[in-house]
Length: 127
Image (tube, rainbow, N blue to C red; front, side, top):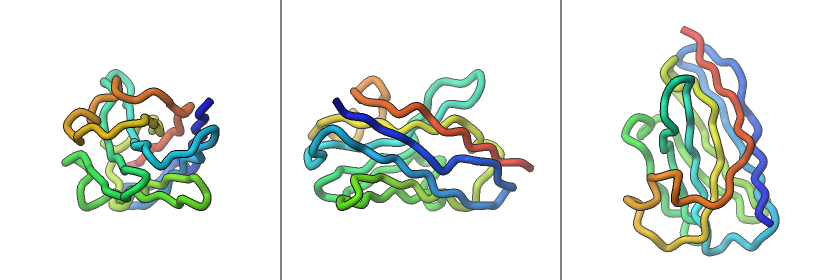
């Protein structure tokens, strides 16, 4: 059974940085896509970024492009998202998600496509 455990959330000031980690276990992930989503209070879940485990190919939401960087360490089975130039509107619970998939990025923007989810980690950006 795939398990995902996020860490690294916290409180940061406007313009600050955080790095979230997602430790994955329970499978070989070579054919997986790993994604980050977020959900702010009263809002729908939102795609943030994703990476194909085998190739390292990445995709970002327009709202974070140029500020966030997703990466993976295949030796540690861990996915990261480095978040720079954080804004108050980035405040949300951030979730790591995974799916065994070769689908196009357009399909993988929906959280419904993902089979496995972490418990979430809170990111709060103060103004």
